[in-house]
Image (cartoon, rainbow, N blue to C red; front, side, top):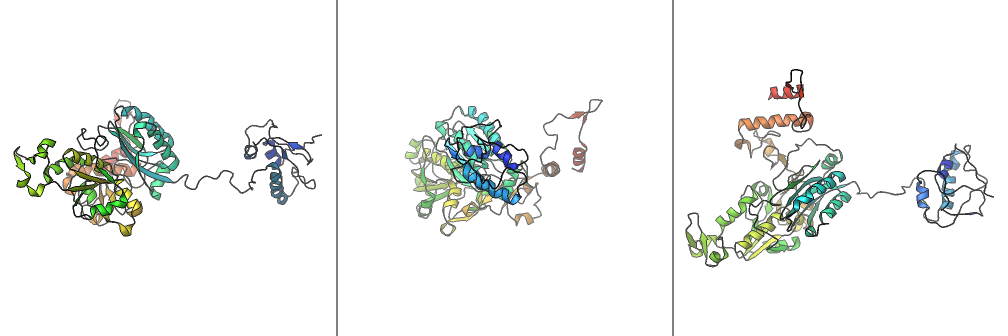
Length: 481
């Protein structure tokens, strides 16, 4: 006969009541985990016991583990002893975590990715992609266009992988080109805390600008703006060069190395001997190429050795030997997307050997040891890190939120530097009115942590006579401006 004792004062009694097993002093009885009780949700013990194998259940008859009068010194040892009877699986001691989470389950990663693809229905992906990012707390910026996708996102590894998996569920976007970077402790705090740091929340760049604490999914004509949608890497593209093979290529004297980034990027770092086009935006690159090299609008004209001059007159290569096309061109950019599109443009203009760095500077800095590197300086990135160095560690540059350009510690010692307003690179380009607006914007951010104040996006409150009332804080800031 099964003898069961029921007492409500013992913690072990409560534990057993949550289990599909009953306590019994008879060691000869067999119990199956199919036995049920009238309890609610199963405990960790019951979850571990779902093997449907007969289990021996017994205890030391000299010690009643269900007795509330038992000493506390016996309780833990008895529970452990009983648990060794409950399970044929490995025993979980009282201090063990039954389901330990991976060490990096909450650590953040930044993944930059892109893919050129024929994607005319790109707009259909915007809402479900944004909803998924918000649900998983993945922040960053993503651009969708008829020519593909371009983005940079931040989140836990599991969340980021789920977002990338959703994107690649569309067969046209499979095989995303990705570069992963670490996240600084400050950026982790911003992400996990749903807030801002002491840095301004303004965008940091033109190609894929984003801030850490929210996600933006934009629809555009191009995933990287060259201003020529007809140039398609899907149809023709240069030769990809692995970072490990890059040094040998650019060290060849017959190779012309071109940095296709903007002047504020090249100012803080570039490869040795690289040509700097000094452009302020990627859309200026075609004009620079046409001015620098002897190119034409059609392959027929190019094969005849003609160039369309600024006055619509033709000039032969013999008349302009300094503008002759180089035998070999190698291009690079931050993550690979701009030089990939630039390679398609050069091929359309008649260049024969066009190479570009696969994965861009970021992949090179990640894979090539500093002792072997031909990179000089730091690499500007379009997010809150501002710049990175070898092994993708965060760099030393900060951002001027007046012009979104990188500034060094020396730049911030200049009298033209004013936090959130101007720096030596934009001070002379801004009017007094623009600087004053920037100061007012910075005061708003410092006061409320958001541009526009706490009532941004809300309807203004009205007084009894129907006039709009501004908050006192807002009025004070306006007066001080």
